[in-house]
Image (cartoon, rainbow, N blue to C red; front, top):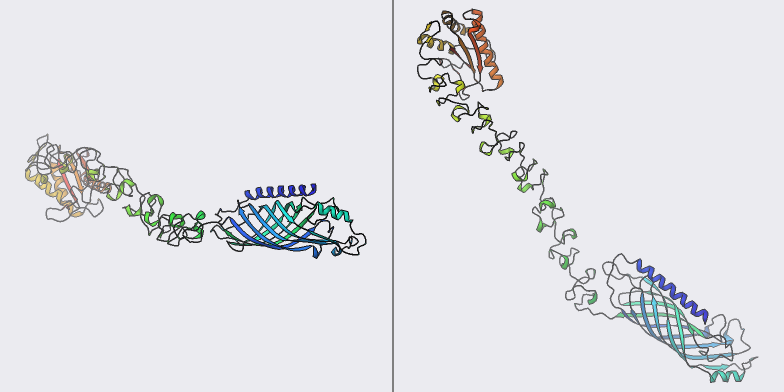
Length: 570
């Protein structure tokens, strides 16, 4: 008895430890398991162990057994099983393989009824499901143990002619002390095969240790120091039940998240109308197949943004820009970017602003110099309202009509070109009133009183118009020598007269053009020195750019000459 109790305790301790270990090592996904109840039929054999059996089992000690059981699953690892078995037990000394008890000649047979309550532990889970809720057809081993009650009513006989039959008084004593009801301790192990969600087959083997020595009706007439018992080997078949399925979709209500909608097992009974693998309840676009990453909505361009939220559903784009592309990486979506191939600023709709003046380069007349919007992004150093690029006097505030230069007398001729800056005059006469020649009133008189008439001044002006140079050089054409000589003659006559030689070149106000004009003025200066018609101290020269880029310089006959020369007497 003590050994049996110790064995049962050891088995239950092992089962408990295994169960805890298995609960830590759970399935990769958790699924709801339906049908906690089972009802089943066992069918098997008994093997008697007791006073008429000592060592080896034998065929006549076997008996058929059947019955009925129910099983309630408490968890994946634990179940309770009440069951009732009906069968028989038998034994015969003459059938023992070793013949040890032939001299005694005892035999018995008895009906057997067992009612028991068993606890089952499944170390590796009783059932396993895939993550889609489909039952895996697995073998599930289990250990069981519990308590039971048996009913026996044995008939004991002694074979005639045995050598040493039991004493009659002992047989009578056993009949007098017979206990038909006796508690038993069942324990053992088994394995189930989950054939289908509602059906299971199993096989188990276990021992019943009786707390009585009268299962066989023999004690004092044989061995009264050891209680009886029997082994059971059973085949089982069971049917699962116990859950309702309201919508008849094959998913029981307790496992069905969508109880009133026909759905799929892998989605806990919820439908997937568009078949995209996302149940309708979690699908933002339940009628259009989409992706898990976009909440079940389509993503035509594959940028991870659902088409319904994608500003550019057919073009791969950025999440920060609502799914629209940004080729130049300036943070402005191409569809809103007026300069999609050039990185720019958001405030200018994605266009660059090199000089940072708030005007996009494409609209900025001076993209490399910060300026005002009023001047199309160009600077105005002197603040006269004329952009520096159009201002002939960048550092001096002037008038628009005078090219941005000062015009003291308001005649439209800038002071630096006005030979009469303090007297309003004509643009055609270098800012001087009609009749003035080279900034002088009609005629010229030197300090010594030398007089040059207006006619001579006109002649001087005509001579200046006839001076020509070879293209791109400061070399004077020989055809100009006659005109220069006439000027030389006038200067020779007035020994104290001084002259300013100015040259103006067609072609703008660039430094190269101004330099060429300066060299040409110098060439005339040098010519006069060589002819010795005037001393060096009485001459000065200066070169200038084009006064009016819209027209060409011509001589009196209208021929283009490229350079306008003027002689200013002082």
